[in-house]
Length: 501
Ligand code: BG6
Image 1 (cartoon, rainbow, N blue to C red):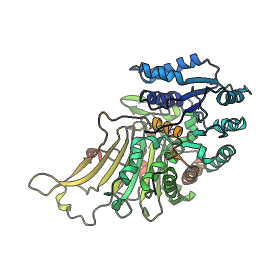
Image 2 (image 1 turned 90 degrees about the horizontal axis):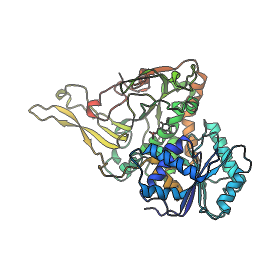
Image 3 (image 1 turned 135 degrees about the vertical axis):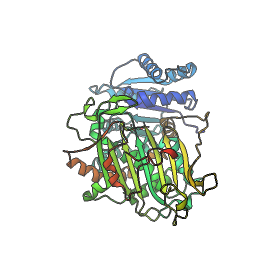
Image 4 (image 1 turned 45 degrees about the vertical axis):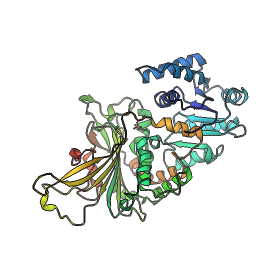
């Protein structure tokens, strides 16, 4: 277990959505599990002036809303002891000086400080500038780190200029670019699965793998985030960050060690090896669509254009699919298909790896239908699981084959279940960068999607659509290299042949 030095966590945007739904609950759960360092204070910063008492009441309400079954009273009492509040009205020119005096001058706050930017992306460069200007980012009294949420920029150019701004005040070791997907248990399990087992290594390459597909689907819509989402769209929101990160974990070479820099060196090599998509080939590599009204869980739901905050002529994609090739020795010629969508039939995330067919189909006569290749599937959510599909003989006198799923689901009923943010917050307090993105990773990920974004930005008159509650638009099938490739929607054998329609 990590021993973390006494620290101060400063949360900017403490009254916002991210803090309310993710950060404060995650910190409370760490308190319950007694994982927060004994000497740690949480200083919440928001634009409204509030007293500490009023803030503690507000946190109590947030937590009660999240855990209606009730709070752990002793843990909550301990948690409240840590909570402090600083009002930072935008028009108060002294706010940052007061913050500096509070943190560095009051003697109350441990001098190792993590500043968490739980604010809209447009705001954090300004906040970092002000923190830098008042001297709060100088590491004279203790370490000073900044955690930045995605999206890191809007495209390649804006990411570069954002980085330039940050480096005026911070060095790379002080910056923690969060991709909360890397905090998910199964995502880390991709590395354990690959590097703690020798079994698969000989097969993990172009000779045996037909293609890889990575899916993140959601049945939810934009959920009150239309302002952000309508600017971003699915490709920026999910593929540039989370799904490309998953791809790097599947495709990377074994690192020299699990140390942060070694891991990140290998991940960035994968991103660099992704074949650039020329603008005139975007349509062969990418597909976008938007949901129309439909039915989810038996209830009618509106289309994207009817969502509050979305303009009636928006062509923002709520579904994006991308085919990329990793042009290196291991993966040459193997397509990686990535897709994500809102308001789809189910909310689920998985990595599905399809193997090639055996070189000779010796058992063709003994099957009722077409051949079934092997699959390895890593389910990320809702249930983390690991499955492998193989062919076996059906019991009986005939030599008939059947697909069997070896289910290596490793979660036991009483295993601890942590949210991604819990581990990542501890890592940031501890200064461990392994699960955070280095700048070159972000930049190379933008290089992958940038040509697609450019073409889509020019083609603003038309977008394909799909009914809410479906598995997405049919046209997405044109991305597949061959007719026997199809999106896998279910990790169950019975669902293996389920194609989109
Ligand atoms: C966020 C995206 O980064 O990830 C959201 O901005 C998306 O649009 C979310 O819904 C998905 O993450 P999770 O952990 O809720 O599956």
